[in-house]
Image (tube, rainbow, N blue to C red; front, side, top):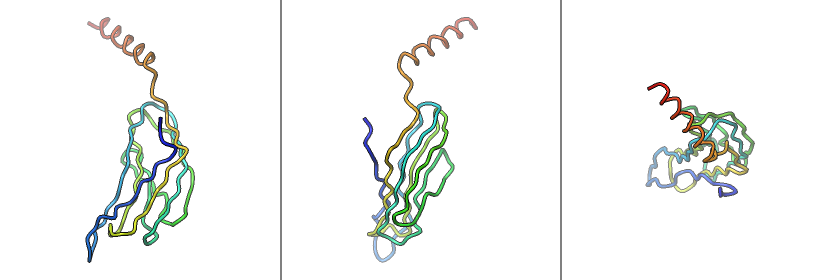
Length: 130
């Protein structure tokens, strides 16, 4: 089964004297229509205002850049959509931000019998067209 929580850690792989802007992303594809929800907590060892955020397909929704910020999200999605989580870093040096996702709930994967029935209906429709 799925873990109770995941942690997305921002990058810390830059080189002195100057690091580079970077980010760490984690994406999943939605298996069916419905609503996904989760709780989140952002912590940072770095300068505040580094962004943590949520992606739904190509749309980015900032969560927070403040240490200790938290909240909950619930959004409708369609089968095939992508949802993702991101943590950015200004310099990718030693200190990083951490986005903890917990209580994650997503639309269920369709049952194999449902998929088989759908495939049979499509096959029947295609045969009738031929």
